[in-house]
Image (cartoon, rainbow, N blue to C red; front, side, top):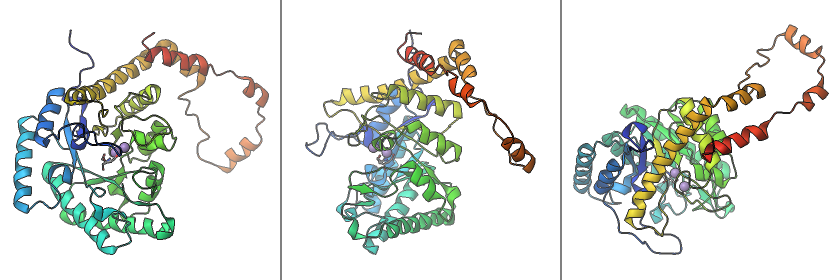
Length: 386
Ligand code: DIG
Ligand code: MN
Ligand code: MN
């Protein structure tokens, strides 16, 4: 019997090369797995049903590689993509690994470091374009501080904006069909990161010269590190027309950035996220920015990858069942879930009418909303009990 949840290319699942290629190093231990060649990752993920891969520049082209070496590596990678029918929807820059970025990249105090970071990003955008990437993610992994005395936080925001504006103008000048997606994180590896949540990013985007070119790439773990309800932030990004990409994974509350397998921890939260993504018509990649437990061998890595995609499809099916469940839908109707009757635009007459209205607030306050029953039906649905 075919698996109804088996991942297929039309699901648009993607993984960063750095995810399944994660060798299992952590701050307290050495790698536990052998490195994987990008061309091998492309083959294996394609066999699992993935749509594509994403990459930082240095996931593919080593830092400091010669132009000839770079061209050979890209040529071989493009051949593997073609052989295995895989896409590269998103690219990004590693502006956090090399020691030169120890004080940040776009926000570093040394203007030469900031200039080098922009140069590296320009070259990485060129690479992304060459591979077919049309979304360019920027995650400011080192854009932060330990010692706040080192710079005025307003200066940091200004530097970040100057670099993003410069890169938007580079893309416009090159006539690249590229949009940027900013990824927030509250801390780690720096003690505090600037622009720590998707909400901060949405506000920052409006201060740019070309805000229409820039959206967000929210990550589940990063928003949950701040104790936020992830899918509420996604709803706001969708409302603003700014959900250009998404990093799916999972996270236990109150821990460091765990980048766990999607759906391995927050079952209800990830159900409502998938329900929102699917019902909103989001048509971008379902990208996993996560990695297998350090306990795993290579077989475990592929179980991680397959599980990530299959769980998404299980939630997608649960969302369909939720929408088709007559008892749930009747409760939602009773509760006025989609009751959009707002006040409408103000008029003097409407304002006067409202001020003259008498409300029976005690009757309104007494109304039971049956959310316990509704939520129990969701739990029953997710546990397979209905
Ligand atoms: C970490 O969450 C960041 C980096 O892995 C990368 O820059 C970005 C791409 O999704 N996410
Ligand atoms: Mn993360
Ligand atoms: Mn991420």
